[in-house]
Each structure stands twice: as C-alpha cells, then as structure tokens.
Amino acid sequence: MSGATVFANVHLTTMAGGVGEHGELRDGAVRVENGRIAWIGPRAEAPAGVAAIVDCGGAWMTPGLIDCHTHIVHAGNRSDEFEARLNGATYEDIARAGGGVNATVRATRAAAEADLLRQSVPRIASLLAEGVTTIEIKSGYGLDLETEAKMLRVARRVGVTLPVGVATTFLGAHALAPEFAGRPDAYIDAVCEQILPQLAACGLVDAVDAFCERIGFSLRQTERVFCAAKRLGLPVKLHAEQLSDLGGAQLVARYGGLSADHLEHASEAGVRAMAACGTVAVLLPGAWYFLREACAPPVALLRALGVPMAVATDCNPGTSPLTSILLAMNMACTLWRLTPREALAGCTVNAARALGRQHDIGTLEVGKRADFALWEVDRPADLAYAMGFNPCRAVVNGGVVRAPVVSWRP
Image 1 (cartoon, helix red, strand yellow):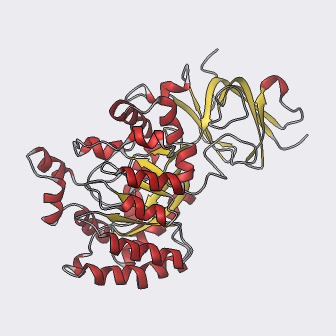
Image 2 (cartoon, rainbow, N blue to C red):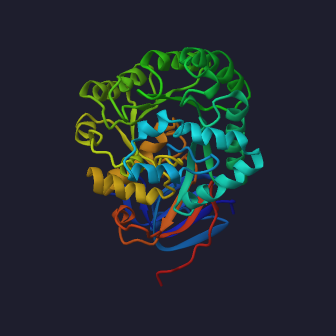
Image 3 (tube, rainbow, N blue to C red):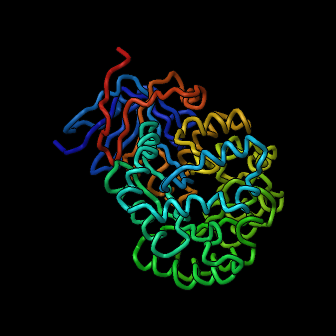
C-alpha cells in the first residue's frame, strides 16, 4: 500500500479544464502523494491502494484561496485618518500632512521584529480561516534598509510558523522616506543602488512593486526601479492608476510585469497593453469602498480584452483594513459586477498568475501542490454571496489537513 491519501465524497471546483463541465465535478475524489495532486476524477474511478481515505462529507472543494496583494505586515493602525476622511479630508490631504504611509512607517520602524510578527499574525489568521493557503506580503513601511529587511524577514517567518505559502514583494518605492524630504530622485537612487540589491542578496525578495502616482513616484522614477529589478532577475508589478492615469499600466506591461493593481483610472491604451503582455489586473475593492471612490476599474473592458482579473484584500492600515477574502469577492461582485465564478477565479487561478506561481498553485490539477479548501455550501457561487459568513470547514496545505474534516452533511 502506498502512502497516498484520497479525499473522497467531495464535489470539485478545479478552476481548470479537463474535469467535468466548466471544471466542476460532483462526487469526485482527489488522490494526494507527497504533498501534490496525483490523480483527480470521479470517485467511482479512484485508484486503489492508499494509506488513508478522508471522507469530505459532501463538501465542495476549491483550490486554496490566494490573497495576491497585501500590506498585512505592519505596526499600528490609522483609525484617526478614517475619522478624518469622514470629516472631509481626502487621502491626498492626509498624505501631504505627514499621515498616510508615513504614519505607518513611524510605527513600523519603532516595532521590534517579534512585536511586528505578533501584531501581524491575527490579521493573517483571519485570512487562513477563510481558506487562504497562499498570501503575498509587501514591504514598504520601512523606507530604509533596516526596516524593509525587518518586514521581509517577518514575512518569511510567517511562511514558516503558519500553514501558508508566502510570496514577498519589495515595495521600497511606496512613499518618500522622511530622510529624503524634497529629494525623491536621491531616494530612488538609494532604493535602486543600495536597498534592493542588498535585500535581494539576502534572498528576501520574490518580486518588486512601486506606487506610481501623483503622491507617490513618477513614471520615470518607477521605470528606474523596474530597471534595477530586472538587473537582479526579479519580476515586477505596480500600484497603477489608483488615483489618476499616469501610464503605469503601459509601463508595467512593457516590462512584462506580473500584475497592475488597482486600475480605477486605467485607460483603454493601458488595458490593451496589459492584454498584449499577459499582465494580470488585480482588483482591490476594499480600498475603493473604504476611500469612497467614484471611478471604478474598467471591468467590462478588461473582460472584453481577455485580461485575467485577480481579486485581493489589499489589507493595509490606511485604505483597506480588510482581512476577509470572501468579503473581497462579494465586493467585487456587488460593486463592480464580476460574476461569482470570476470572483473565485480572481482568488485562485488568476491570483496565482499575479504571483507568477500558476504552475504550482491556483487550480486542482495533477502535479500541483495539494492546497485546497473544503466548503459547506450548496454551490461554489455561494462563496461570493454571503456577507460576514464563513462556510470554510477545512483547509489542506500540501496534503496536510489543517482543520478537522467532519461529516456535517449526514
């Protein structure tokens, strides 16, 4: 008998072709060997000879969910800014007055590494309870070598101490470091020539991001960051067109970027550039809702041009203190008219593409990691339907069940 495990009595939403209609299969089974999917198909056809059979009780199984855009490792919060916006201040007003990103920079610089991890774990645990098995974690609240390294070390520790895969993203070009006030080009020099190369040499960086915006960095400065990333062999992504259209979508596409994120003000030219280069659009409804924005991302155009759409929480202390991937899915549907299936694809197959990990995670397919979630729902669309309700009953990471599987449907 082999050491394989079969998960049976389960309905499958593979988010891939080749299994059932639209990638869905009722009364299916998944065989797992050495932490990877070895076979998938109807339960009646499951190969014999396994060490264990897990009865999933008629649950629906999806790939493990992926939150592909977060700033979840940080210290402090910014509820005072939330209150200020309700009293009439704008996001840009707050940033120019020394708040915004720099407020979190001060708190994060002051936090010891252990305390930074302690503050971040509850936020991450909320996502894991909703079926998340992979999370992207950005730096960008240090803006100096020491604190950026601290944030990225904590992100790596999250992937070791918690049952979740972690992709790290260097976001040194998030805001202007206070030490460089009035000297943005000098700060970009430091990012490109000192901070990023040293962090990359330590193995702390999986991808590089920037905030290309009027209150962030110009197109020219952003391109310098991209050039530095490419010299180091690192993929790029971009906070693009959140508050205005600076042409960031075209720029990140030109550099073969993994994703362009936000995109509320993206032009047709930007979307066409993304479509031509396979750059994923990461939609962040939490920030749009929290900031009470009026200009929505061009979902219909993204759909028409075949741009893959991912959905993420953008968990951060200033503009999206959201720790529910299921609520992000619901928001994407209710606010921007994604279909429930598009929302689920946005947190699985397309989110994996936004991290450059589509060959390993994001779908239930032979050879991929056995990362999946089990749900007590009648149909997969229910995941984007209910608000404030979590139907996740078990999460499996690399074939290991991280929560009890119970037969809740006798």
